[in-house]
Image (cartoon, rainbow, N blue to C red; front, top):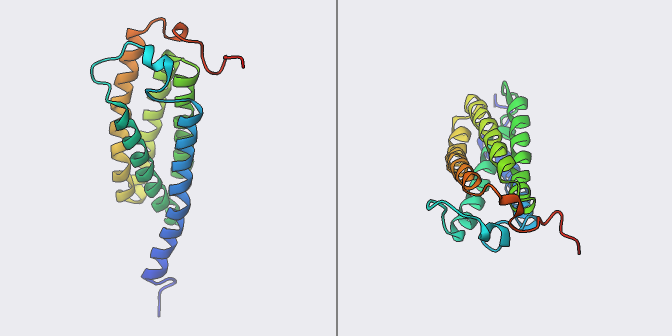
Length: 182
């Protein structure tokens, strides 16, 4: 036998990474949304003027868990690719863009900072694009798993721009959750 690990051992290694990354990323996404009261139950969001392209609430509840699943699988593939050139940078950029992604909902829905949230989503899109390119150099399937996320970020950037443009007084519509006194 001239192999270090069999195919089944390699497959199990990927599955172990996936068993860590999927619940972790899904949980972090859930916590970010929950803590910021994101979505249509948010009084501030409900009070905003919104463009016609804003999807119904159930779409966000379906899209984000799916995107987080795909992102987690992509990350698991890269974590599994030990010894791959550029792996460390790809993982680092993934973590940075994910952390910034997790800050977006509290910034937009919690702090009511529509303008800052628009600029932040552009940063997320740029970092996610670079991450996807780096993933593609290591595992092409991992890069393809990131493409729906990039598409959604592009769409969401347009929505964020329109919401910011349509609501110049967005910060003052309803008291921000981060400033509310109990």
